[in-house]
Figure 1 (cartoon, rainbow, N blue to C red):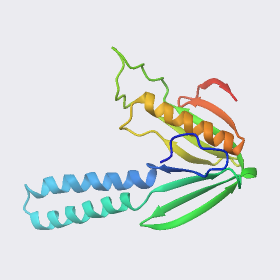
Figure 2: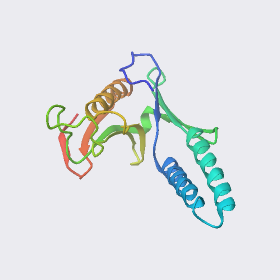
Figure 3: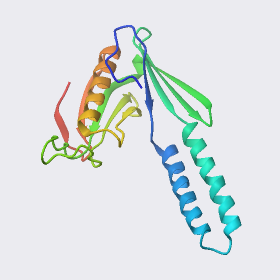
Amino acid sequence: MVEAAGSANEIMEYEVRGGLWEGVHAVIFYAAVACAVLATAGVMRLAMGVACVALLFYSIFTIFSSPTYVMIDPSAREVTVERYHYFIPSRRRVKRGELERLVVVEAPRPPVGEGEKGSRRDLSYYVRVYLELKGGERLKIFRSGMTGAPSENRGKAFLITQSAASALDLAVAYTRSGGGRGPEEK
Protein backbone atom coordinates (compact mmCIF):
# COMPACT_ATOMS: atom_id res chain seq x y z
CA MET A 1 0.00 0.00 0.00
CA VAL A 2 1.26 3.46 -0.86
CA GLU A 3 1.21 5.56 2.28
CA ALA A 4 3.07 8.67 1.17
CA ALA A 5 1.73 11.65 -0.69
CA GLY A 6 2.06 11.04 -4.41
CA SER A 7 3.30 13.46 -7.02
CA ALA A 8 0.97 15.40 -9.28
CA ASN A 9 0.79 12.86 -12.14
CA GLU A 10 1.52 9.63 -10.30
CA ILE A 11 -1.21 7.00 -9.91
CA MET A 12 -1.81 6.27 -6.23
CA GLU A 13 -2.90 2.77 -5.26
CA TYR A 14 -4.25 1.71 -1.87
CA GLU A 15 -5.20 -1.74 -0.62
CA VAL A 16 -8.27 -1.70 1.60
CA ARG A 17 -8.85 -4.66 3.90
CA GLY A 18 -11.82 -5.46 6.10
CA GLY A 19 -15.48 -5.02 5.46
CA LEU A 20 -18.38 -7.45 5.45
CA TRP A 21 -16.79 -9.98 3.07
CA GLU A 22 -13.66 -10.47 5.15
CA GLY A 23 -15.59 -10.26 8.42
CA VAL A 24 -17.88 -13.15 7.48
CA HIS A 25 -14.93 -15.29 6.44
CA ALA A 26 -13.01 -14.43 9.60
CA VAL A 27 -16.01 -15.74 11.58
CA ILE A 28 -15.90 -18.92 9.46
CA PHE A 29 -12.19 -19.23 10.26
CA TYR A 30 -12.78 -18.97 14.01
CA ALA A 31 -15.70 -21.40 13.77
CA ALA A 32 -13.33 -23.85 12.08
CA VAL A 33 -10.80 -23.41 14.88
CA ALA A 34 -13.56 -24.06 17.46
CA CYS A 35 -14.63 -27.07 15.40
CA ALA A 36 -11.08 -28.42 15.52
CA VAL A 37 -10.99 -28.07 19.29
CA LEU A 38 -14.35 -29.81 19.63
CA ALA A 39 -13.23 -32.58 17.29
CA THR A 40 -10.57 -33.65 19.77
CA ALA A 41 -13.15 -34.33 22.50
CA GLY A 42 -16.15 -35.81 20.71
CA VAL A 43 -17.44 -39.04 19.23
CA MET A 44 -17.64 -37.58 15.72
CA ARG A 45 -13.95 -36.81 15.57
CA LEU A 46 -13.43 -37.80 11.96
CA ALA A 47 -16.40 -35.80 10.63
CA MET A 48 -15.53 -32.77 12.76
CA GLY A 49 -11.85 -33.01 11.86
CA VAL A 50 -12.56 -33.09 8.13
CA ALA A 51 -15.08 -30.25 8.46
CA CYS A 52 -12.67 -28.04 10.38
CA VAL A 53 -9.79 -28.63 7.96
CA ALA A 54 -12.06 -27.84 5.00
CA LEU A 55 -13.38 -24.66 6.67
CA LEU A 56 -9.89 -23.54 7.67
CA PHE A 57 -8.52 -23.85 4.14
CA TYR A 58 -11.66 -22.29 2.64
CA SER A 59 -11.58 -19.24 4.91
CA ILE A 60 -7.84 -18.69 4.54
CA PHE A 61 -8.09 -18.94 0.74
CA THR A 62 -11.11 -16.62 0.62
CA ILE A 63 -9.53 -13.90 2.73
CA PHE A 64 -6.22 -14.16 0.85
CA SER A 65 -7.87 -14.06 -2.60
CA SER A 66 -10.27 -11.19 -1.93
CA PRO A 67 -8.49 -7.83 -1.61
CA THR A 68 -9.88 -4.47 -2.67
CA TYR A 69 -7.68 -1.89 -4.40
CA VAL A 70 -8.41 1.79 -4.90
CA MET A 71 -6.40 3.57 -7.59
CA ILE A 72 -6.52 7.36 -7.91
CA ASP A 73 -5.35 8.70 -11.26
CA PRO A 74 -4.73 12.47 -11.02
CA SER A 75 -4.14 12.92 -14.76
CA ALA A 76 -7.45 11.26 -15.73
CA ARG A 77 -9.16 12.67 -12.59
CA GLU A 78 -10.85 9.39 -11.81
CA VAL A 79 -10.90 6.70 -9.14
CA THR A 80 -10.88 2.99 -9.95
CA VAL A 81 -12.12 0.52 -7.34
CA GLU A 82 -11.05 -3.04 -8.08
CA ARG A 83 -12.54 -5.79 -5.90
CA TYR A 84 -11.53 -9.41 -6.03
CA HIS A 85 -13.58 -12.35 -4.83
CA TYR A 86 -11.74 -15.65 -5.25
CA PHE A 87 -9.26 -13.92 -7.61
CA ILE A 88 -12.14 -12.84 -9.89
CA PRO A 89 -11.97 -9.06 -10.39
CA SER A 90 -14.77 -6.55 -10.67
CA ARG A 91 -13.81 -3.01 -11.58
CA ARG A 92 -15.68 0.25 -11.10
CA ARG A 93 -14.53 3.62 -12.43
CA VAL A 94 -15.72 6.82 -10.79
CA LYS A 95 -15.10 10.14 -12.58
CA ARG A 96 -14.32 13.33 -10.68
CA GLY A 97 -17.77 14.75 -11.48
CA GLU A 98 -19.42 11.96 -9.47
CA LEU A 99 -17.36 12.67 -6.32
CA GLU A 100 -18.50 15.10 -3.66
CA ARG A 101 -15.83 15.06 -0.93
CA LEU A 102 -13.44 13.05 1.22
CA VAL A 103 -14.70 12.04 4.65
CA VAL A 104 -12.33 11.15 7.49
CA VAL A 105 -14.04 9.27 10.36
CA GLU A 106 -12.21 8.79 13.65
CA ALA A 107 -13.07 6.94 16.85
CA PRO A 108 -15.31 8.83 19.31
CA ARG A 109 -12.33 9.69 21.50
CA PRO A 110 -8.90 10.73 20.27
CA PRO A 111 -5.97 8.45 21.08
CA VAL A 112 -4.00 9.09 24.24
CA GLY A 113 -0.57 10.45 23.37
CA GLU A 114 2.28 8.02 23.56
CA GLY A 115 4.23 8.30 26.78
CA GLU A 116 3.59 7.30 30.38
CA LYS A 117 -0.19 6.98 30.13
CA GLY A 118 -0.41 6.32 26.41
CA SER A 119 -0.60 2.90 24.83
CA ARG A 120 1.25 2.04 21.66
CA ARG A 121 -1.45 -0.54 20.85
CA ASP A 122 -4.77 1.18 21.57
CA LEU A 123 -7.27 -1.16 19.87
CA SER A 124 -10.21 1.14 20.59
CA TYR A 125 -8.86 3.81 18.24
CA TYR A 126 -9.55 3.65 14.52
CA VAL A 127 -9.60 5.98 11.55
CA ARG A 128 -11.22 5.49 8.14
CA VAL A 129 -11.08 7.56 4.96
CA TYR A 130 -13.97 7.50 2.48
CA LEU A 131 -14.63 9.03 -0.92
CA GLU A 132 -18.23 10.24 -0.83
CA LEU A 133 -20.19 10.23 -4.07
CA LYS A 134 -22.89 12.77 -4.87
CA GLY A 135 -25.63 10.19 -4.20
CA GLY A 136 -24.34 9.67 -0.65
CA GLU A 137 -22.55 6.37 -1.33
CA ARG A 138 -19.14 5.99 0.29
CA LEU A 139 -16.08 4.21 -1.09
CA LYS A 140 -13.56 3.25 1.59
CA ILE A 141 -9.97 4.09 0.61
CA PHE A 142 -8.28 3.59 4.01
CA ARG A 143 -8.98 1.64 7.17
CA SER A 144 -6.56 1.64 10.08
CA GLY A 145 -5.10 -1.69 11.00
CA MET A 146 -4.97 -3.31 14.40
CA THR A 147 -1.20 -3.74 14.24
CA GLY A 148 -0.25 -0.08 14.01
CA ALA A 149 -0.03 2.46 16.78
CA PRO A 150 -2.73 5.16 16.78
CA SER A 151 -0.16 7.81 15.84
CA GLU A 152 1.00 5.70 12.86
CA ASN A 153 -2.58 5.12 11.71
CA ARG A 154 -3.36 8.83 12.02
CA GLY A 155 -0.25 9.68 10.01
CA LYS A 156 -1.14 7.24 7.24
CA ALA A 157 -4.71 8.56 7.10
CA PHE A 158 -3.41 12.14 6.92
CA LEU A 159 -1.03 11.36 4.05
CA ILE A 160 -3.68 9.46 2.11
CA THR A 161 -6.27 12.20 2.68
CA GLN A 162 -3.83 14.93 1.69
CA SER A 163 -2.71 13.22 -1.52
CA ALA A 164 -6.24 12.15 -2.58
CA ALA A 165 -7.71 15.60 -1.85
CA SER A 166 -5.01 17.38 -3.86
CA ALA A 167 -5.12 14.87 -6.74
CA LEU A 168 -8.90 15.05 -7.11
CA ASP A 169 -9.41 18.62 -5.86
CA LEU A 170 -11.93 17.56 -3.21
CA ALA A 171 -13.09 19.11 0.05
CA VAL A 172 -12.35 17.17 3.24
CA ALA A 173 -14.82 16.61 6.09
CA TYR A 174 -13.55 15.39 9.47
CA THR A 175 -15.99 13.61 11.79
CA ARG A 176 -15.97 11.51 14.93
CA SER A 177 -17.99 8.30 14.74
CA GLY A 178 -20.29 9.42 17.58
CA GLY A 179 -21.83 11.99 15.24
CA GLY A 180 -19.73 14.91 16.50
CA ARG A 181 -18.09 17.12 13.94
CA GLY A 182 -14.40 17.70 13.82
CA PRO A 183 -12.82 21.12 14.21
CA GLU A 184 -13.72 22.29 10.74
CA GLU A 185 -14.67 21.25 7.24
CA LYS A 186 -12.18 22.28 4.57
